[in-house]
Image (tube, rainbow over all chains, first blue to last red; front, side, top):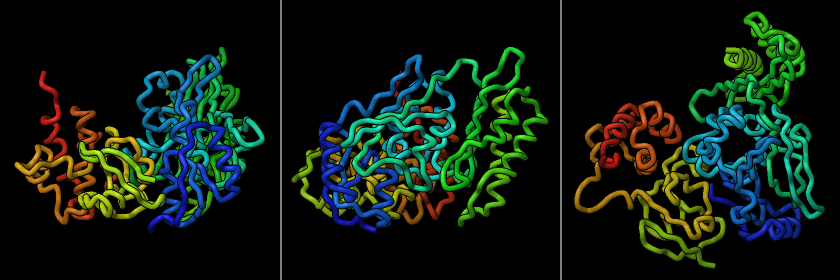
Amino acid sequence: MKLPPLEYACPASLSEAVALLAAGGGDARAIAGGQSLMPMLAFRVVAPTLLVDLRKPPELKEIRISADGVRLGAMVRWRDIEDDARLAAAHPLLKAAVEHVAHYQIRNRGTVGGSIAHADPAAEMPGICVTCDAEIAVIGSAGSRVIRADDFFVGALTTALEHDEIITEIRLPAWPANRRWGFREFSRRRGDFAMAAAALFYDQDAGGSAVNAHVGVIGLGDRSRRLPEVEAALNSQVIDEALIERAAEITSATVDAQEDIHASAAYRRSLAGTMVERALRSAAA
Amino acid sequence: MPTNFEVNGKPVSVTVEARTTLADCLRHHLRLTGTHVGCEHGVCGACTVIVDGYAVRSCLMLTAQAEGTKVTTVEGLSNDEALTPLQASFRKHHALQCGFCTPGMITTAHALLSEEPDCDADRVRDVLSGNLCRCTGYISIVEAVLDARSAYKKPA
């Protein structure tokens, strides 16, 4: 369908953008790359009266890498992450996950901030944020604040953002050089949304046992979540084939999955176990 | 307020409703009907155009967002004299039947080959996974794109 009637503004600064969103009440929406919002408009799932384009403020476009970790400006595109060779060492899990985001043309416009603001349960970036304990920096009429990823994602297409708040930055904690990690995703066609995906990492202590295990699943329930039971099973253990199979069993038994037109809940739980199994095997290899 | 940008090397200035997508602007206001509109929600890839060197879906972009950019449509990738190497390769390999998806295939393939003239079949399949064709089964399209690579390689 054609988009509903709306007005468009393209402010030069973040403060102007916040003022426009605040003045619009709940009827103004920020637009980043538009790769999720434009379909939502075409389906008339949302019908804002004003779109506030965020493409001009220059501070939203930077990828900054330091000892504290990786900071992605909200308007950083998937393409920018693909093209940034530093990220292969600075955050290999992010790099691997982004390879699965949508299709070529979408990756040329879609942004990290737009993806997490949209909060599709099957999208990779929210899953990476949750798995890696990312912090989401936002700015609004009441000032700036930082929201933990686990608090940011409330449910399907629902976040903790207020209507006049704009995501400025995603902060991923530092990535130790010897960290083990894996990412596996299943979709029927390349680039499509995940029917299930697993993002995970752990560090190893002097004896070779896993510590600090983080295991996240994508595309299962109303939002990406970590699996504390699986993490507990991995921590303080040497990751071997028997433990990998056990982790897959715990995943399938404990994960919360929803049924939709693409797959039943039981199939998704089983698939999640397989994704965790394969991701762990690649991490341990 | 008019939106100013460049289409196929020529400056244009259009005044359209804010909700008008770049795809509809190209077709209805600039009469460049080579850009096809299939799904209108970013799934089929038929409306792919090249904006500042990047292949993008023109149904997922507002006209206003094209302000100051250089847009290339499928019309900009052809000439009146003869088939371009990419077009000739599509013809040679029977890479189209009904032709509806072809503008999107051509623009996407052109953007890919311009950046990655050495891409392999797997990369071509990966990139074209965002373009739906209901006639060919894709094999002939992938072959056509691979065969056109030589035309995009810079002379040594």
